[in-house]
Length: 434
Ligand code: CMC
Image (cartoon, rainbow, N blue to C red; front, side, top):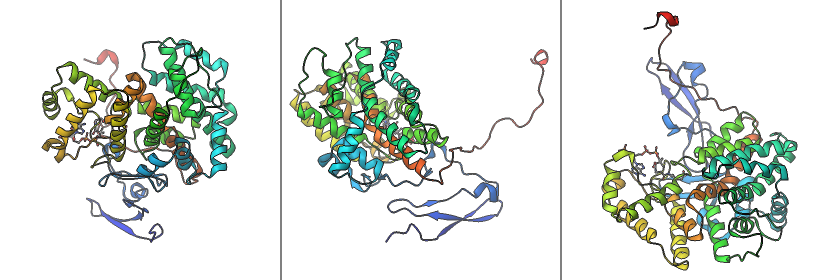
């Protein structure tokens, strides 16, 4: 039975003896929440939760995670089933609209995106200003910010038609921008999307093809890419999605909100971890392949070194996405001729899962542990791994931004603080300071 409408309160007793009854927000699955909105006005206290370890910032209907059991569902469908049976486009529709599309809905959705893959010619000139030795992520974020100026007819967050158009432009053009920036960084001639290909096929063509030749798509690799994109498509209120929601809460348009998400994702503790994992594996290999030595460094917290691709704020069990990726890593890497880095990764995982340090802290492989190995096998350079994560996460960012904007109860995000700085003091003129 749904308990969403059951009235319950939680009593909070404060140090000064004051008591307050706080309403409980019931979930359909997982944790209930204690609503604290009136705490300050009625008691003079705020809550403090460093890193939002225990804070629900929104009520959402999009994605469910049970971190203890290792469960992930988009709109009620298990990630395992979606990865096996769906396409990225179906999953994107599901996240944004709440239901799996029928044939007509899917076709309309795909067409809307497909006919919005082409970039304005003037826009493409921005690539010339991108330095060739920089990481692609800031350039991708910059380009998405600028899309907002090139699409001024769809910036109103409260006009559903404009939101739909902005969604199509972002879903269609951002993957092309990622491929364009890759080509620019590698001094390759530009490629343009073609309508006979799906979004994923166009992306692969634009990454690895040449304008002078037909590109031969490998259906196995297309399928693998589809699966990886599905696995990255949403993960409820993670750092980048919360960033998108924060920026969007100020009524900022979809383009700039998504650009902010790309910036947050760039961080090595978030999306940047997939690149960091591969660099870690290469480092271990280049230093003689001694996994034990590396693990000792991690456990002694030497120089802040961590086992990248391990641990998660929410999962205290095997990340279900990591289990799927691992299966595909074996398949793709075997198909493409093996990789010594996979052996190192398997050895690290085995050691970690049998080591007290990791067991006590409940640290398991996360989605990033094996993805980089697949990307590498397909031929993506290391600095393209996080851009690939951002491609996959587009539907989630958009779905959360849309959910927030469609909810009339949404408010601008504006946390409080517990101030611990100086109390009021007298200004000392410069000439009197010592
Ligand atoms: N290697 C070694 N120790 C770790 C690791 C790790 N990967 N992750 C956490 N710990 C330890 C940490 O040192 C701490 O130990 P102690 O209790 O002795 O101080 C304990 O485990 C709890 O860690 P935390 O940093 O308080 O946990 P958190 O929830 O704040 O951080 C995390 C979560 C994902 C940032 C962290 O586990 C981490 O840095 N992992 C490596 C980076 C990574 O793989 N990130 C990708 C996350 S999944 C995809 C995504 O979100 O983009």
